Amino acid sequence: MKENLILERTHRVHLKPGGEICNRLSRGTRVVAVQKNGEWVKVNWRNGKKKGWIHIACDL
Image (cartoon, rainbow, N blue to C red):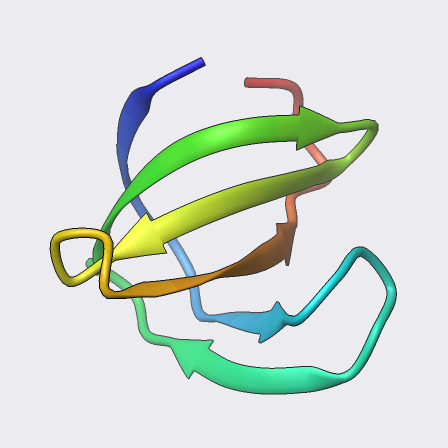
């Protein structure tokens, strides 16, 4: 699953689903969805230099 997304709202980035918060992504940030685990989506941004999990309640 490699899907380009533009975030509609601010998200907190976690190291693993439900784990420690490591970053925040503001609204309008372009990310690439790499993997999905329930309501959690693993994303990359800044050309793959940054990675983490965000919680998205709606289905992609």
